[in-house]
Length: 155
Image (cartoon, rainbow, N blue to C red):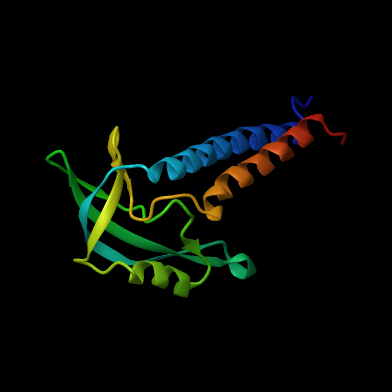
């Protein structure tokens, strides 16, 4: 005898995954909004480049590119290292977009780093909210909605 239908497994997966993505999305949006008023300090770019990742196989194979910019900065005598450029998703299907982001930050460049006062390890080079900041929240809510539909829908 079966314990659970396929729809219930789908519902559980989507509800849990959608809730997690939604929470992450809300936290990202709140941090992005708050970052406009974070204190700033001087920093230095210590590495800058492109990270390429490939997933899937055959015709479903997909390559994405991520700008990797690492920088160091000092707050209250402590040295920190971070890698967030902005609160928008900087993963791209095109290498050119990632190169454009990383190209703006050469190793040795002086940068202004905005950091969260209560958690100085949480930092960003380009503070503020952008439409892309909402990506995880919107996707999480969509997955959550699918989970609700699978749980209560007919079928």
